[in-house]
Length: 347
Ligand SMILES: [Zn+2]
Image (cartoon, rainbow, N blue to C red; front, side, top):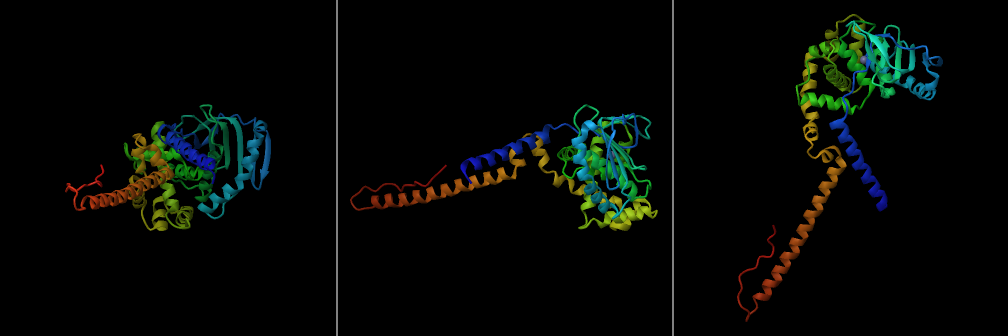
């Protein structure tokens, strides 16, 4: 590798670490902008173009043609991933509307809220917007995956009632596999006020406190990730779904599938949180953010220390040899006896 290439790679490492540090420490708290509910107040008439892939119909604003075509390429793969993780096989019919601007959703709270996406699980109809309620561009892939997961979960459980925290946790888990901002939010709760208990999470999803909701999305997502990754092939979660489909209660379905109660699984997940996010206090306090975030930089620092230590050892051996020679000369007969020299002492 040339020196320029080495420098380029090093620069990229540093740039990446800086971006990661800024995201972790100062990144905006994501808004809960993806929901399940009844679309209300969306302007869908602009979605006048249509494309069909398998049993999925994508209606879109002709101005958003290029992005719509990119989505179409991914939708079948995303759906089969969710289908396999949750049930093996599901009804594949979906109608997705892709429009430029956000609309509102009507929820059980009776308070219509603005959202960037919404899934009407019963009908399999999804609406997603290019722009979030605050006008910023949405992360379209995550948004659509989130809404598709709501529909997939509804079908995997045959529409049986399940807690809202679980619905949102599954949607978030499939929405985005690596989510730095959600991780930051959760770490902040772990080392701050604590992660709300499951019952509190559920309440937060039904309430109107947006900060509590953001923490709850992050916690529910992480707990579902834990449940999904606990066994090698994810069959425990699929068994939960089949138990619920045949009428087993939500809590009993977990005992049958995992051999543990939901409370035990919850404790198991919580017990690992502090260790998993041990990096957070270092990063958030501003101490050594780069070294903490970039393993490559840590390796480089260790190697540098080792080179220095080896260098000192070599110098030390040379010093000792020189001291021995000088001592030999001084011991020759006829020369004055001098005090023993110690040339090896180093600070
Ligand atoms: Zn949702």
